[in-house]
Image 1 (cartoon, rainbow, N blue to C red):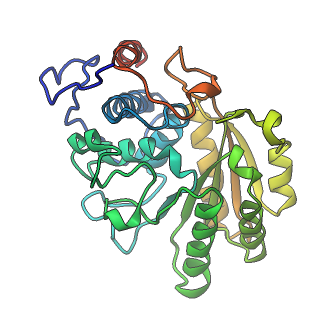
Image 2 (tube, rainbow, N blue to C red; image 1 turned 180 degrees about the vertical axis):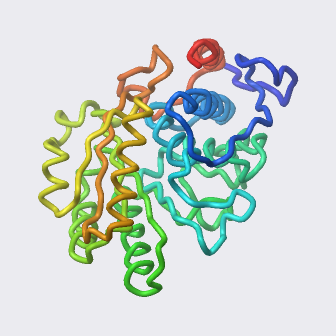
Length: 307
C-alpha cells in the first residue's frame, strides 16, 4: 500500500497525518496535565512511522506516558534550545529500537522542528532507526541499539558525574524487559550499586513483550523487581500509564538523589505494548512493524478521543 501522506494541510485536525507545531514546556504539573502531552507524543509516533514504512510501534506507544512525565514534568533538567548545556541531566535510550518515542518527545519539547519527524529512517536523516550520536540530533547523548550497551554507557556517565566531576547531575536510562536477557545489563547494574550511584535512575519498560513473543516464553527474566533489589537498587514498581504513580516513582528517585542514600534507583514500569491504540494494545506482533496508512488514520482517530 502507498503510505505517502504528503506535507499538507490540515494541521488543526487531531486526526490529520500532518505534523503540527505544538510544543510543551518542562515544568511541574498536576497528573491530569500529562494526558494531552502523551497523546501528542503518540500521534507523532504514528505520523512518523507511517511515513517511514518501517520501524517499531509497540514499545514507543507503550512508553509515551513515562516520557511525558520525565521530559515535561520538571523531573529532568535540560534546555531545549541548547541540549549541550553543561547543567543538564542525561537520558540514554538503551532500548534503541524504541527511538520513535524519544524523537517524538524531543520534537514536542521544541528541540528540533516537528516536520523533521517525517524523515524517520530515511537515507541521510538525523532520525535513524536507532539513535546515532554521529547524526548530531539535539538530545541524543549516545548511539544505542545493541541491547545492553546503552545502560552500560549510562552507568559510565553517572560514574563520571558523581566520582570525577562531582556535580549534582542525574542520569536516566530506559531498557526493555526483554533486554534484561542480556548479561551486560546486569554487569552495569552491579557497577551502579558498587559505586553507590544515587544519581542514576534505571527505568525498565515491563510490557512483557518482545519481538518473538511473551518474555517468559523466550527467556524468563522474572521476578524483575526482586532482581533489581538483590543487585543493590532501591526499587519502585509503578503503573506506567498512571501519571500520579509515574510521578511518585520519579519523586522517590529525586529524594534518593538529594539525600545521597548511596544506592541507585530502579523503577519497574508496568506497561502495555501499543497502549493508546486498541488494535495494538498488548500484542507483541506490533513490536517491530509500522501501521499502514489506513491503520494510522484509525489510530489517530482513536487517539483524538483519548485526551
